[in-house]
Image (cartoon, rainbow, N blue to C red; front, side):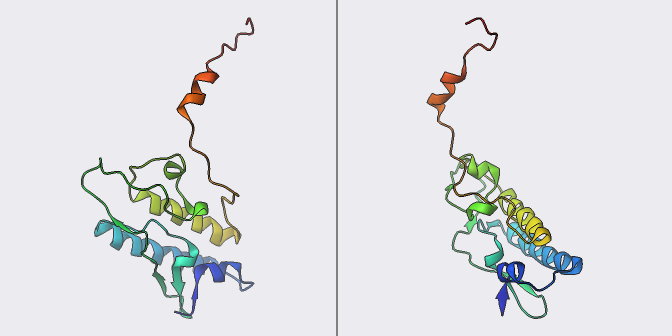
Length: 145
């Protein structure tokens, strides 16, 4: 493979709607295959999508991949997926999640292909809410006290 999708996105070369369609189709077909084998990739991002000169795309870097357990009570780590492509449920601290986390990443990549910039760029991930702080928000808003 000669490049990755990140390098293509940040390059000055034009990306047509046909390029976007071909890339998305291949990503989704690859994920369909992985998910049908009960594999969560958990780090779908442009840098992990290799592309050759014929626009043939391959998913790589399975370092964070995991087999989906039939037992939904098995907790999974929150430290997965590069921050910009991390699904809201993971940002909010979920330890039980599905293949939807990979599909969220694909949606972020789709927007990035169209705009040529990262969709949700932030300096730090959303912090998990502390249950103790929620008690302080129970003040009356009726103005009498």
